[in-house]
Length: 228
Image (cartoon, helix red, strand yellow):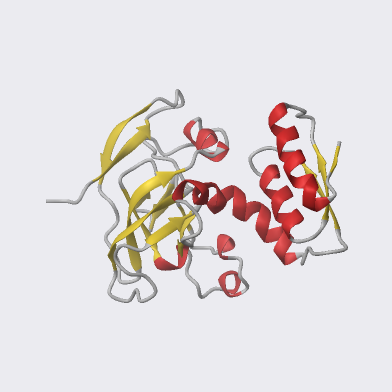
């Protein structure tokens, strides 16, 4: 009997999620199966459901800010144990061998597989985190530090990485000035990263509401934050 994973999928652009079961890809030697406990909601999920950026492969299960526990692993997986709390972001596979992967740009791997709205080897559809389980290559799975709750970790796997990586690659630190354009789901995290790195942070946004003022009032204590 074929294995089945269960989740909630969109069947058309209306975006109404309904129960859906599917056959996952086989668990390969370097793969990990994760029993999902938490998953964030990202704007990309909404765009995918509505075919806003590219045609969706309906039915499609979205969700790419995933946290859960390792329930199975392939025979060649040594860095993870059954029961480990782990996270998965927007990608479930990269080859690890091409020039892009070696340079640290695995998102540009020509054989990459995205977590949602993609296919493994043009055969098994890649479904996301609004489900009970997911499978991914072990190089796309990350340990979650015990100091971070699962709910807090989810948005860091997309919005957090998107804003943290460029700051790190540009070696942001004390004595530098950083401007953050837009204080939304990503921007409010970028402000916190840059401030903690010791930079002087300027936040630029048209959204001047109670939520953003609260963020600024908390950060101004240690970042010399300027708000426009």
